[in-house]
Every structure is written in C-alpha cells, then in structure tokens.
Length: 301
Image (tube, rainbow, N blue to C red; front, side, top):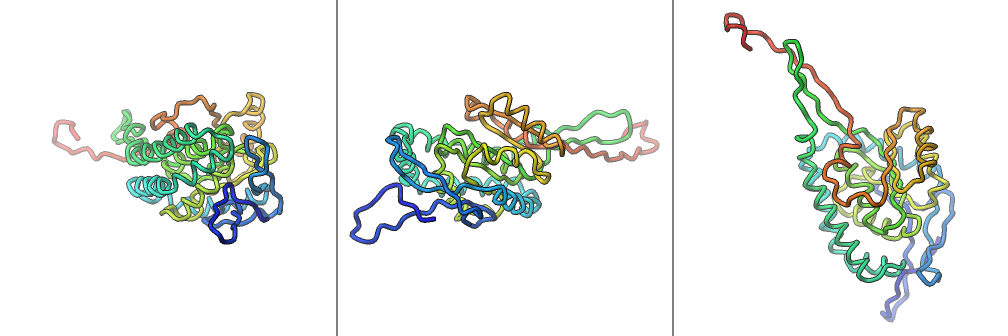
C-alpha cells in the first residue's frame, strides 16, 4: 500500500514515501483487508493513503491489549507516570514533524502549534495524576462491625475508544492517556478527518517505554467499526467522543450484552478535567479486614 509523503524535501536523493500503517501489539502491520482511504489537504488534493481498518484488525488489537493488561496494571503508579512523561519527552523532539502534518491536513500554523502544545501539556498533566488519583477516590468506610472496610479504584481492563474527529493530536491524547494512566490498556480509533498524527504518535509510543499492546491505534471509518467496538465481548469499557444521542443509545444497547460501561464525551469537554476521566474507567474494589478486639482494654481496639 504505497503512499506519498505529506511533504517533500529536495535532498537530491530518492523521495521515500511514508506508509501510514496501523499499530497493534507494539508493531505496525498493514490492515488485513488490504484496503485504504485517501487523506486530502484543505484544497482537496491527495495527501496520503491511510489503512482502512477492518473488524479483524480490531479483534487482533483487543487480543494484544488483553495480553498486556495484567502486567501494565501491576506496574506501580509511579512507573506508569514515568512512562507517560517519557512519551511527552519523545513527542517534544518530533515537534516539527507533527506541526508539518497538521498544517498539511488543513490546520493553520497557529492552530497546529496550539494543538501540539496542548498535547504535551495533557501528557505531563496526566503523568502527574498517575500516583495521586487513588488518594482522592479511595476511602475507609464506617461499618457496624469489628472490621476495617477499604474501597479503592482499580482499572476496568481493555478500553475501546473512538477519538474525537475534529482534532489531529489532542483528541487522540485525550482518548488514550487517562485510560492507561489508570492501568487500563486501550484500542483507539483515530480521527477519520485527521488520521496522520495518530500513526506518527504511534511511532513515538513504539520508541518510548510503553510496553507493546498497552496502546493500539487503528485508522478507518467510524461507521464501519463502531458497532464492533460496542459489542466485542472482551472489551470492558467503550468511550466515544462526539456521538449523536441516537448513536449513544444504540451503542449502549450493544454494550449492555456484556455489561460494558459506555462513556460518551463531547469535544467541548474541558481539556484538563482533573482525575475525572481517569476515574470514569475505574471499578471500585472493597476489602474487609477483621479487627481483633484486645481483651481488658476497656473495649478499645
């Protein structure tokens, strides 16, 4: 599936075209369907071919995410913070690449620079929350017996996300980072209108410290994949950005078959909602621990 570069440099050598493939399990396979779709610039001129992911690609991505989930969840929150911060470090080094891709897809220079800065801010911001959100949402609960009763948030597992369509970079960062911050693994469907930055971001992730399978990124048509995202029986939660109310109800019904949590956001959602986006993808685990009463102490413990 040969493609063209988004920009050409007059180096005097061969112009090597970039192939925008998908990202599954830490590797960059081509879609099993062999299909692709055209990405055009603001003047409707051909820009690149991008993989048109299939249901099989999605299933493969879920398998990779499930395989990586336990080990990712078991890492310390501090280590997850280090890894997410490392993504920001690696992304910052590719600033010119992402600015060029965004402008080639139709962003103004100022909008591209603003969006890139927001993406970096989000990564650093959520890296800071990795080892703090549990302090906010954990609790010691009062009970009428000789027990300690603790409630703590734990990751749901594999999260399928459809990123917002109106942004090239910040949308996919918002889609995946809160989920992996909380110990989940993700399968993300990139923006249909601005897909190039998603795959370039995957290249950054692949060369950072993120284990293979923690983040999986697909490109393609939301209309083809959205019902598979909602109905797959090994996906624990579905997150959809900018879905019509009727579609939210439809996808919610599909997800109900395996009690999948459906979460629907609008693009007007604040860029930095604190730990709320993390907590949306957590389950509460409650532990009871008996307290041995000490005799002869006046009833104290």
